[in-house]
Length: 102
Image (cartoon, rainbow, N blue to C red; front, side):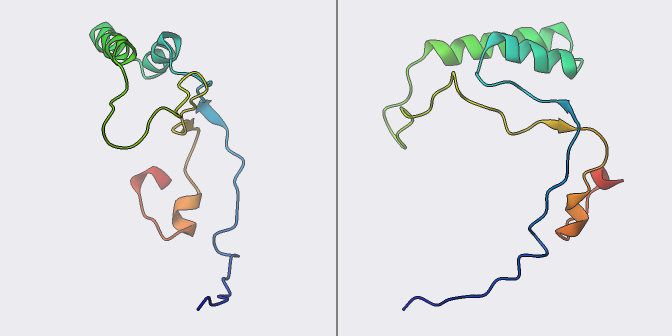
């Protein structure tokens, strides 16, 4: 039996305009790895390690076991982890406490 449940969405339906320090473009590429590494001010050895890891990933076939990964379009892939500028104001609204809200 399906129930109609009334949900009070006022607490969770909000959106903040976010000024991103870094927002990645679509695609999984060497340029993206270099951009992220540069933005994070990583040492050269870390960038080299990441680039070798990307080359290894791209050279291997997708696994044939487990979930079907063939529908993932890595050229149209977008990172969802961008770095916002300033405090993350939505955490307290959701009852989350973090040092990043300071």
